Length: 299
Image (cartoon, rainbow, N blue to C red; front, side, top):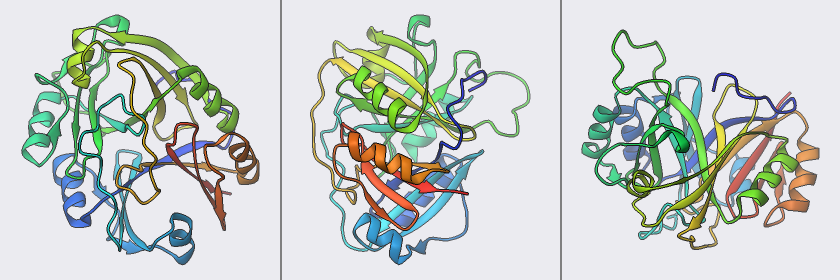
């Protein structure tokens, strides 16, 4: 985002990683429906990568603008995404894709195998809730996604399209306590806080397909390029908790890179929900609500 504050050096959200049942189906959905570009073909994980996650798998990296998505398929079946999931549940993690023609992309997503979350099509939130136009849906594996038109870019804006009109803007985590989650990501990763607001009203209820919504929203920024982080603290209705294994379909991983892995490993050990696991130059752990995090060392 233009004008976003920057964190301390060396911390970046490099990509998001989704566990999938069928690699060909998932890759086709993200490529042909949403416009992601694959970088090569699926390839087996290294022994170190398989050991870190606990089982052998294959992965495929895809790009959208200057942002990246990783699809991972384990060679033994993964637990499916919970069928009755709701946006306020504490395992909920979506990522938002910026676009201009949200109506057209919504139609393509549903026709291409996506399942709606939002009621009554894209919703434009009031200025107090950010003024964005948004639509939430699930991919064929059940992962929640969001299409997003920022408030300063009108939907279906006239004129020529920019060369990069889509990218992953942010990943959003449902959390039990917004203040506590803010403190965790600031103290462990040094992310820089951005805006805070409380969303409610009929547009937010239709967006989330929930009744009586009151959700605190807080943003945190890492170094560019890459998405930022958004925390969703649902005060009403309260969400459910479920323990996820790293290999479950719902166990989306936020992958960060750092120049000082030892320091972040130590911080995560003292604040994370479970003891982190380190193999070679990567650490796997969880935040205080159980969302999975991977941290990789870079030069």
